[in-house]
Length: 192
Image 1: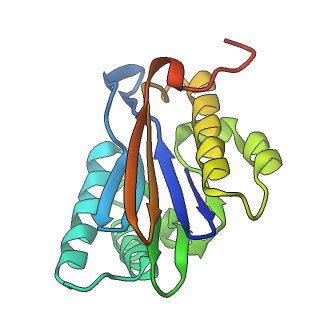
Image 2: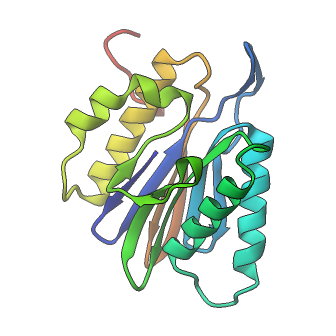
């Protein structure tokens, strides 16, 4: 999940990796750094998603300047579309650049769309109602952080393929602040 605020973005994910009905990793960080202020959230096949992120990271490192978030998202879109028959992965791109500030891009199926917030992965189907009702334009950095934590925690409660800890990255002009929420730091809801 990723959400824009005035001055940056918050991107977050759970940490469970599954293969069928088996959990193969409980603490995998699904937030991948593409460049200093550009991250992506991985979903689908972990190996495929990491391969796409590695290819984009390599392309961006060829350019020593800070790339635009749109450029990184376009690379993800192009690689995802080119290898759509081979890869089973979806990457959401979020970051900050001097031209447009904080941005969130969805790249599902080779499309590219900028959104004020985006959700993805198996747990997203359980939280559409929550994010549609809780999102408000103009939220502060802390409101976006809490919105992201709540949405991921709700998905973790309801989806058997989601769980573990919550990884968050807040990306602004000043840089990136990474966090991990574990145990009692993860929001609780009435049905637990």
